[in-house]
Amino acid sequence: MNLPIYNKEGKKTTKKAELNDKIFSCEINEHVVWLDVKAIQANNRQGTHATKGRSYVSGGGRKPFKQKGTGRARQGSSRAPHHVGGGRVFGPSPRDYSQKVNKKAKALARRSALSDKTKNQLLFVIEDFEYKTPKTRDVKNLIATLELDTKKVLFLTTEYAPNLYKSAANVYNVSVKQDISFSTYDLLKANVVVIQEGALKKINEVLG
Image (cartoon, rainbow, N blue to C red; front, side, top):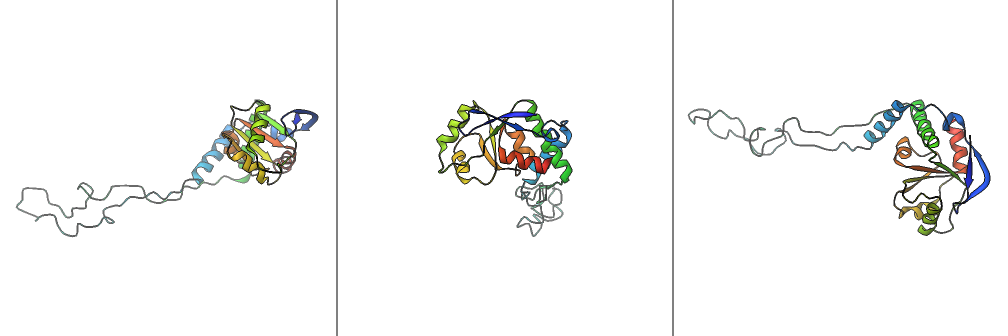
């Protein structure tokens, strides 16, 4: 499969980019995509939530009232869960939410997400470029020329491009990742993926 290559102004050139069918035209495995995204979101959880059970609440060292003669039910501590100021029953405690997905499954998930973008014509290939200085206007003009103003755009760069990162930082719904450092979640979160030629070559090497 071939796609036209655009220049950094967003205009179509006469060059064509060849896409690896194993990556960009593979059978989409929705279940593996779901597994990978679920693991990514779970791994982002801190798991530091906690509440105090009755053994951690201060106070309540003696009986609230005597055992017999009051007409009330016997009580051993004022910090029992059914008392005001008492501990919480079965409250959350710190835990590790991390999940593991094997490398082959993660690669298949990314290939499936890329194939879905290609199938729906939501993938663009652009020439390698880096701005000399950070300018938000340059990224806005590029997106406007490609008619992606209302889309969530993911840029995949050939190498670390600090000026492009800074230029896109203030543009709503635009994110930048270096070549293969994107995740399945990044692809699904974006409406459109714009790949530089060098990044496309790297993706073909790693995922192909």
